[in-house]
Length: 513
Image 1 (cartoon, rainbow, N blue to C red):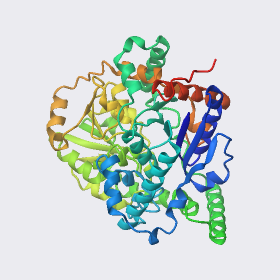
Image 2 (image 1 turned 90 degrees about the vertical axis):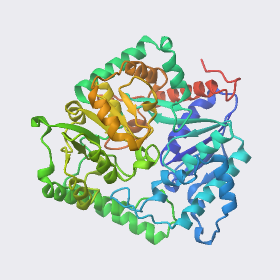
Image 3 (image 1 turned 180 degrees about the horizontal axis):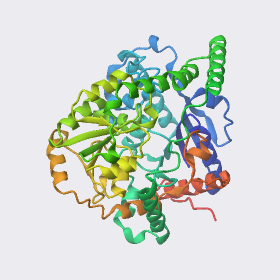
Image 4 (image 1 turned 180 degrees about the vertical axis):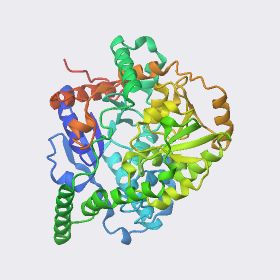
């Protein structure tokens, strides 16, 4: 089986270990790769099944982009073949290209690339991925994200050329991880399971029921979500990390390392996260203290809008039309019945990232207020009359809590009926939709448990963020118990092979054991 992996950051090492565990279950495994992140690549030891003739390094595509010319005819041809319908969607998905160079740690919409440079970057990605697919001839394209140009284009090429595609994705139910056969639409294996509930095991139903009880008690908490303890460190610790990052930056400048779009200015990141953002957030709270609402003691009816972190796939991939959240909040607030207010809660990761002027624009709207950032989301949802979101997990949480919600974007869960979640297909009719929903407050989530059980049945429990990727400041579900990481990789390998067989990648493959 020939597998083309598309990775960003440490997903390269995760992909390698999954495939290492799987190679003993197949007759022959050959792997090509499109890799983002030169630093991870430098510390990577490719196993024998990696065919190094078929490795594309993203940072090579950025060399001498000012010397390259746009081939409009070629771009048009690619757009006709793989656009959905436009190729700009691939650019918009990639914050490193579409947004400013500081956007990871502060609001920065000013792209570091000109329009011409964006088109050249897009063109180079198209040519390199096309060449890689033609020469390598993969049976399967295996993705690990949807936030880079290469992620998006590899998906579009696979779909256009009838190549099997799988994307490793967290389900946001406990620690269950799914291999979806589509990046945007619901995966067919989940849809099939949902439509045949008699095939769902009793064990999966129990896991779903247990998770529902946990959400009702403590809110939507899943493996890898940001931990409440991921706040600012003490002064001495902050100073240490800033100095260390400065030394690292000087080393990079002295050694004149080549440009890599994946590289983040760690010095600027530490200065913003440890000094500027906390000060800016404190100023925001002092300036608009009268706009913070005491939901617990408030009698007024309100609609709840959870703010999205920017940049994030929730907006850039699953909610492209709603990236301007100021205008979105304005439109929602103007679509409410006269006796309702709109309460928003800032995303924890956005704490201090936005300027005070951003909130000033929001609070100029007469019926808009903000919930305290440390107030549990499930408490706000339960007190609200309705939840409105673009994508993300809050609307799913509302359904579990028995509250209706309206979804403006295209998260996969919104495609399933009788979940208590209504997909707003005509944005211009939002006021009519809101009024209609409020008149009938009964939440029909009769098939919610069927959906959750189907997700559990169709995925595997793996601690992707806390154990495999070892991301700091994330919620772990281990309860202090040490996890056998090798067993988790073996579980993913078995699951990957199972999904490959289901897709008909190689009918000769058989599960080991």
